[in-house]
Amino acid sequence: LLNCRVQTVVKDLKNLGFKNITNDYIINKEYIELILQEYNYEIPSSTSSITSTNVYNELKDPLNPKLLESRPPIVTIMGHVDHGKTTIIDYLRKSSVVSQEHGGITQHIGAFQVTTPVSKKKITFLDTPGHAAFLKMRERGANITDIIVLVVSIEDSIMPQTKEAIKHIKNSGNQLIVAITKIDKIGNMKEREKKIEKVTNDLILNEIMVEKIGGDVQVIPISAKDGENMDLLEESIILLSDMMDIKTENSRNTMSEGFVIESEMKNTIGNVATILVRKGTLNNQSILLCGNTYCKVRSILGDAEKKVPKALPSQAVEVSGWKELPHVGDEFIQVKSEAIAKKYISKREALIEVEKNASRVDKLNDERYAESIRQKEAKNKDELDEDEDETTTTNVSIGPKLVNFIIKADVSGSAEAIEESIQDLGNEEVQCGVISSSVGVPTETDLKMAEISNSEILCFNLENLPNDVINNKHGVSVKKFNVIYKLIETVVEILENNMKKTF
Ligand code: GDP
Image (cartoon, rainbow, N blue to C red; front, side, top):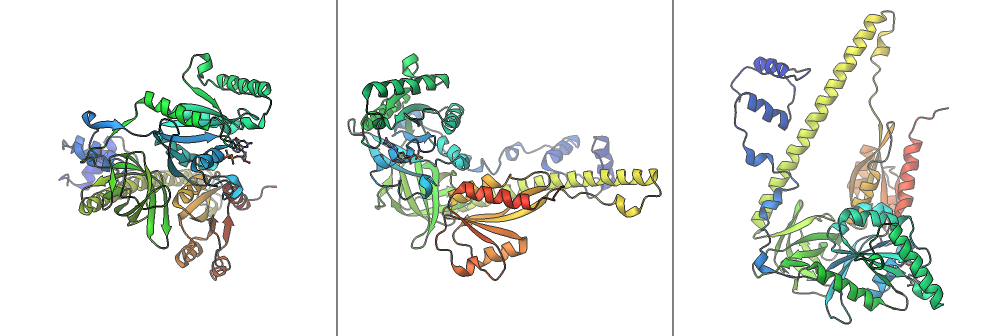
């Protein structure tokens, strides 16, 4: 393409400072651009900035300031385990979530809307998970949040996960309201006041600018058990959101946008996703583009699992009609036709392939470079020590041992969170390899894949695993978990067992 001989290019590359150049050296995109410049070729600038992560942005319309209107605030509840997050959600939802959860830990994100008792305005609550291993999902949750309610128990005050949440709130730039929970547990009013004072002072020590010291963070003492001040908490959220002036565009022609907060395969209706609308109105038959999949909206279910005709901004609904399960935390955008959705998915897939190749090429060149250094060193050693047995010099290290796993979970949010929690576990001797992570009971393909890749299968929140899966004919180990930290502990143990024993 450059119109010159390979030898000339190789020579020029050496002159440009490239090391170890051979005829089959594979060049990545950045280097190609540099070389093209050397040969005075124009680089098409429009293509270089489009990546698989931003390729859909060109389909988005910027917000039109003239069409902006208020939308309900989206609220996340955070705080230390057992400080009362689920009980607040439960109170607000008026259903009994606490008793259903394994070990009282909320395992995946859901969302629901309430109408406040006094001002009759709407608030959307995201039901975020409370466990540290779900940090990644929580980060995603918080990105789509306007306000965070930090819960602090009147009995314990600030605990490790409260501090972690405070750090997160500061980083995310979200607005904050503090709820001091379980006040009903201190019956004596004087004692109660004293304890509230103590928690407030602890908040100040953690640099929370509460109203007491002239800041703007409201502190509301509540009891989610008997409902005391719960209405005040809801109205405080409305007060804050009015001050924040939360707005979006929602005209007849606005194309909707939002986030996936949960996704799941349902036996009766296929792939469904809970999505949170941030802009525009979502209607039946709308075409939604999201990651590597799209959806022609077949049905919309509201809070109470009832069919609704549409979803307005800040509303969370369950949508069916997805070709594949979308990923939790991914953004969706509405497009005009299935053809556009398909075209952009192919465009994104092509970009992913190019990006993968680029990093593969980098790795390959690095490996070749390392290998050539190793060969040189081996040669030097040979020359220095001619008596040494030839075979010992070729004994090169091949990096950490990979211990493989396949993850199967009840919902894609959990599968992704587990993958992210374990994939970086390991050291220079053993590394965790995640072959695949997906939703549902392990299939015959999963078992075959595990056999071939020498993986163990880790199942999360999957009840009633069939016997022929657990005692499968492939001899694959299938382990069951309901609590995430138990799963992580087991993975660490397996990795440790795979390390060479040193005495
Ligand atoms: P989470 O881990 O933050 O979701 O905490 P939970 O909501 O599961 O609450 C932990 C325990 O504290 C449960 O036994 C609740 O019944 C109890 N609890 C939560 N809020 C209150 C409250 O306002 N008053 C009282 N007395 N108990 C509460």
